[in-house]
Image (spheres, rainbow, N blue to C red):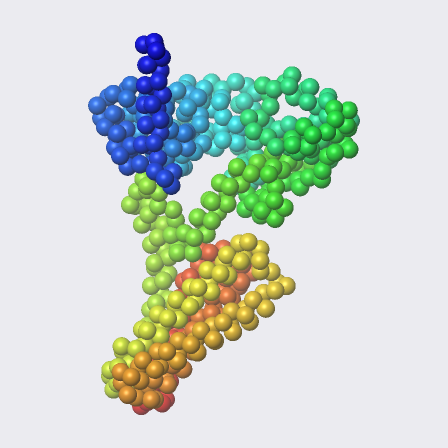
Length: 471
């Protein structure tokens, strides 16, 4: 075996070893690998750094950037060529991408943007500061610049911003053979990834679509109009959450985007929708807790500013609920055990309300609840709450009797539990529906009101019944 062959085999083994080291079994970055990258950056070892980065997929490089410090990221950027940078920028978290863009030279950034699809390119340009945006846009070729400007003209989080302008279209009078020959001849102008050929009329309005898999199965002489399927057109101003719902409902892989006149202006593919679903889901989960996303590099001031308003509102509602306790202060002084038990009633009610609230918010987001079945849903949750309340009342009542040997106290506690858990389930179902009806996001503020209802009802029910029955 020659020396060159030995060197090649050794290089291949090294690449395989690095790939094994880079990712754990769950595809998460290995902490040891991240440490190796940080060490190479600290030593200024460019060769070792190139070896480590070559073992990673662009999405993993983007993940790596999130684990590194801001200083390390700045040191890493010069080692990324425009093609690699183009693949990484579309994968980065927004906050980290904005920081990275500050350190990339305008000329390098313009080349990277030229390698990106129009939707990803528009997202990157939108994150630039005004001065740098002007420099970068001036360095981008006119055709690509016009496509980016057109995309940026659409509102954020709409189909127009989500779509890629690169699309494969063919006139309805073409045959399969004509279409294939044309696409091969103009292959450089085709999107990097596409699933459907959109059939258009003379006004460039989509009248159908031919899946690529179908295009390859039929004879060349077959007219496209004969094998095309109906399409689900998406208007450019449609909210991205609505787009994701359409993709999910009709199991779409791609869909054409049309302007106000119905002309084909782009396409949305399922890989874009996966990102939207993840983003919207994260937003709903965070909003349900009254917080915003605290990324790996989020600053303390920003986090505090996003969370403090809801804590202030919660302070007001908690004070209102606590006022019930003040109204029964004399009763509590006469029977101290009440002070130990009323928080339990409120806490269990709060948990029951949170369960129902989570189910209701998810059902609203997935369009499983409408005016048609809202009443049935509320009644169902009310019955579930009543049954859960009875079960909790039985168990906790027996335990309390075993500890206190007081039938009346156990009965009061159990009855209050039934009342609060039932009201909690009712609030968890009704509050999101009411907020949705008045045009507010149920995920953002529902928890505040449900917590208020469960605390107020729990305190009032238990202390009120105790005042009537025990004292």
